[in-house]
Image 1 (tube, rainbow, N blue to C red):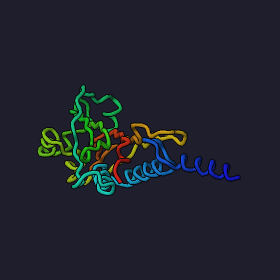
Image 2 (tube, one colour; image 1 turned 90 degrees about the vertical axis):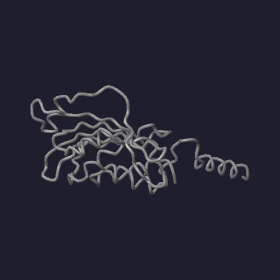
Image 3 (tube, rainbow, N blue to C red; image 1 turned 90 degrees about the horizontal axis):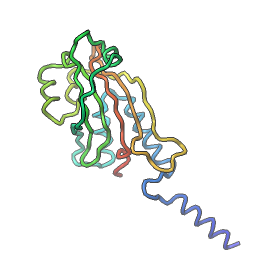
Image 4 (cartoon, rainbow, N blue to C red; image 1 turned 45 degrees about the horizontal axis):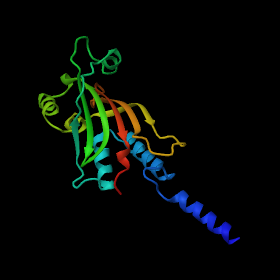
Length: 194
């Protein structure tokens, strides 16, 4: 009888002990779902990530920077132009960044935007700084229209994948004019910290 008790206790200990980045349900999935809900409830992903960074104690101060990622330009195709209500021949710019808080890269973002809907200082800031798009265009009073939100973690996963959430959204000015299409992929580093 004692042998059975100790064997059962050992099995329980193995089941609850963390192993690397193995999922120990429901904690990582619950955190990912919580972040996803927070992102969906707010217009600015940048501000949501800043609050998340503060809560998880990822950096002091909790500041989000947009690190430009090298790679080829991705011209706006017909679907992007349609979603942005771009006029024929209207310029669409592309910006790819990693949004980081301290040493933690929390997401990668592809962004197609209509520079003609932004002010000249906003365009200059996007071209020359590491400031996140949402922070730069905040004076537009934009709102977010989510096109898709996908959790990339499945109940059967034994480990956390490198990418955990993907959102596709259009940003619109206060008067409902679309000016940006974003595809944001959130990394497992959102689980870092506390």
